[in-house]
Length: 273
Ligand code: GTP
Ligand code: MG
Image 1 (spheres, rainbow, N blue to C red):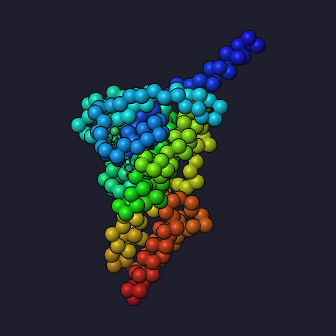
Image 2: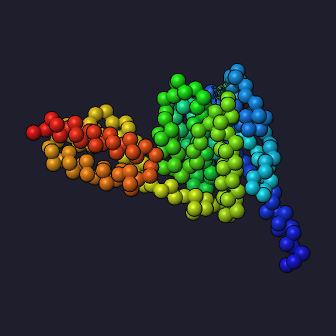
């Protein structure tokens, strides 16, 4: 027993992991990795051709980990090249550009592509995902705000960071937290530890906030048909108010959603006899 102890400690110390980057072309995947590994930023766009592979050693807490990074090309043209690299991954860096709504809307399709490639026996629940809302230095063109991105990520149990590969903001914190979560996963036998699952809000709350944000008018916001009665409006309002009241709901964007619901109800009641 005693003789094995140092060996076990050694094995605990070094760890080899595989991470991949995913997201639309030109969102900044390669630049995020370059900023962390090489501490520099390249302003010129050099599209990744198929896949870029690199190995890096990092120190996280008391552990040294060897990271195999597979930086994927985002362009649909390279699907055939990247599809074989999804397997045996412990961590995914999922990137969108905060100034490009399409790249945010595409995140679901990226998850679907990975799920499809992993096949029916693949399990995405035991992979650490970090969402990078990138290019936050371009404040003028921002079209996806923080609460929207955070809600999407956290309602799925993913980490969320606001990043800029250009200025370096958020990059080190993102990688440290990401690697730390992967170590916890490996130490837990490859399963996501229960402590990292709870986000403090429900899927119903997240869905309601998303629906309210995307609603086209006050009727739609309360989820009632145009021409609904005062009673129907009040009933729908009460249900949403209970679900989203800022004292009870900690989901990102809940405060704005709650205010919008209050305003929608007031506007509708003004016009209903
Ligand atoms: P593909 O390899 O084609 O999938 O693209 P990618 O996601 O790897 O994008 P890449 O890192 O090559 O960056 C695309 C462009 O965005 C480049 O011109 C970068 O200089 C620029 N860029 C990347 N990150 C940032 C950022 O945080 N801020 C700003 N302003 N520009 C960025
Ligand atoms: Mg790239």
